[in-house]
Length: 361
Image (cartoon, rainbow, N blue to C red; front, side, top):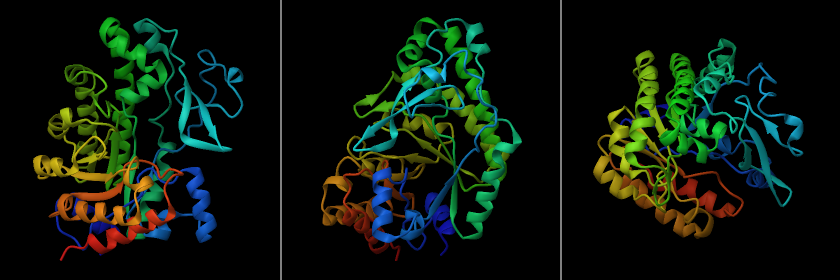
């Protein structure tokens, strides 16, 4: 069975030859260096035989439109400004730049009014040229028998607070709703267009998501999430499904988002990720929602993968394949990036265990 067939069958609750797997957010720079030293290869997905490849929007050609809000010359060395105007300051540890540990500079801190929110420039997500590389990648990967996920994470909430700061955005929800409404509506409209464009290209999965939870529960109250984020997310998902009813809808949030799982199902989410076992019980979720949701992830990157033994990894994989993967509904993966603490032997054990214990007989 080709990977694409395997992934589509598993995520539609159908039995296939085995549970599919991938490496979620990939390897940290340190781990990628170690992989190259050990194997002489550059692509862990190809080397280990992962079932999924990702693609996304191409870089913008519209640059330097944010200097009135954030002057790049004021940022420290190695910092950069992205296409939304947010400043990124990479974290350096042991001479390694971490791809997801950064300081942020928020370009909308000094704005207050609805008019200022409406006047802030946003990137040209609607431009056709930005989807050509994704079109080619999807065709290439499909020709290789691989499943493809088009990514548009940080869909609404995260993108908004990356511009405004989380503190001010959450305060805006309470005491400056006109500003929050204008900002979120503008981002939502951009994401509707992006979802439609991706759906037209016919990837197997489109990834949406915002980190809306901590490991102790939601970042905001459930009523606040339902007021500000749920209807906008529903609009974006509906736009994708209107264009392509066959595309699978994937939603990512770190932390314990159990409180909104029924809401996510209601608005069309089919796949939940990453199911951190440190704060969400994948076995309980399978019992409660396994007929409505598939699960992508479940292998702890704060526990078993970095700090367990290879036997611990094998034991976790066996249980997840047998219970969470019963009758389909599981793509097993680390719940986040493979960090420097993960032993090589545990990575090998992960892949070998999926292929051993993930088989459907």
